[in-house]
Length: 410
Ligand SMILES: *[C@@H]1O[C@H](CO)[C@@H](O)[C@H](O)[C@H]1NC(C)=O
Ligand SMILES: *[C@@H]1O[C@H](CO)[C@@H](O)[C@H](O)[C@H]1NC(C)=O
Ligand SMILES: *[C@@H]1O[C@H](CO)[C@@H](O)[C@H](O)[C@H]1NC(C)=O
Ligand SMILES: *[C@@H]1O[C@H](CO)[C@@H](O)[C@H](O)[C@H]1NC(C)=O
Ligand SMILES: *[C@@H]1O[C@H](CO)[C@@H](O)[C@H](O)[C@H]1NC(C)=O
Ligand SMILES: *[C@@H]1O[C@H](CO)[C@@H](O)[C@H](O)[C@H]1NC(C)=O
Ligand SMILES: *[C@@H]1O[C@H](CO)[C@@H](O)[C@H](O)[C@H]1NC(C)=O
Image (tube, rainbow, N blue to C red; front, side, top):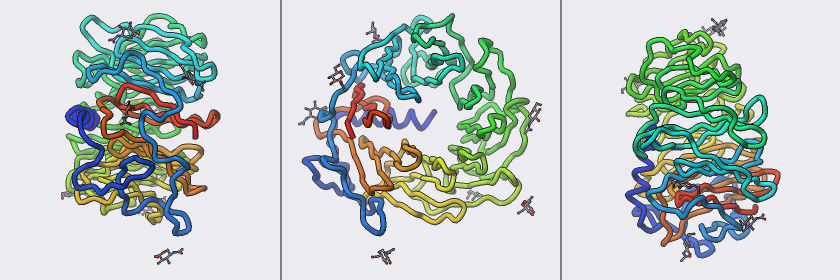
């Protein structure tokens, strides 16, 4: 997607720089330079406290994994499977599975990409029959949007099963029921080995983001270029409803986990989040306004009673439907140009993670504790970045932009 591309490019341009960003006040904690905050979450009016030893820098992790020697031109990516059993790492041609119980390499195979093409990105879902579906996009150069997506099924022994299947387009969203929708509006059934779409979203060639309702039938979409927000029947491809025109670059959509609400993030000059109620989607939406530029990223709490929304230099948690702000994290800055991204509620909603620039944050609502893993003044960053929490083993896993996966005991 375009925004990921912008971030990736920014990462490249800033490969060599200091952690101190112009216009952002910083403080030194544990010898780590971190952004000073205007507001840093709180419980009973007491600001969050650092977990012992935090913030921490790359290099002070308990252990890490790399696939090859990290290089700014490489194509590294890594995923922890939902069952927390495996870490999968890829370099754009090969994917290796590491067994997290045994802490050892379990399997590896080469993606069957056409000659002179690259495998970009890594998505893994559990297969109903056991094992996993491993997806990657196929591109001719690193920053291109995938024209096709390859799926390689692997068995419980992690060995490839059958030939890879090629789908048109990139991954828009995948439902729990195993339907994949691509930005060009094709819906595929991943439970079959057929790559013929089971439905085509009628008359919508250019969609930006998708979200499946928990029923796997209702599908919300937004289009940045066409400034539309729609509700579809993913089984038939029929449009159920076109939400009123926003005249804005609609950016992102997310159903609440209970399927009661669907949220749309509106960019351009609107900078609004609209929340419609599915039981009565013709009724006026709840509207949240007052963002620093675009509301860039959002995630629903597992109870669907709260929504976390990020804008430039800030992350706020709102009650739904009251819109009351219950938590705020905000950097102390005269230039807040960098949005918080990567928001995700973890640990059954007891924790939340987000990312700001090269720092990955975690906050625990119960204990009012905060963790931060970040880059130091001499480290370099160039690649994609994600965060996982191994709740059973008690590790935070940071997939860092220097083609390294770090494990931190917490
Ligand atoms: C929290 O602190 C603010 C400002 O110091 C005060 O106005 C407010 O009443 C306090 N709230 C609670 C719940 O103590
Ligand atoms: C900064 O981080 C890098 C990457 O982890 C590490 O190799 C290096 O030793 C660190 N530098 C300092 C001065 O601590
Ligand atoms: C990816 O890693 C595999 C296994 O280490 C290696 O054989 C292959 O050359 C690597 N490919 C690239 C593009 O780095
Ligand atoms: C996992 O293996 C690595 C070496 O590959 C080692 O450095 C690390 O300590 C191991 N972690 C655990 C939890 O055993
Ligand atoms: C979706 O389409 C299928 C197939 O036409 C139909 O059976 C189902 O009732 C539709 N559901 C909704 C919610 O429109
Ligand atoms: C978005 O902004 C445009 C231009 O200012 C305006 O016409 C439109 O009504 C706005 N939409 C919403 C939902 O506020
Ligand atoms: C749906 O919303 C409209 C507009 O607010 C309202 O008139 C109507 O009564 C609502 N319908 C139901 C079933 O709640």
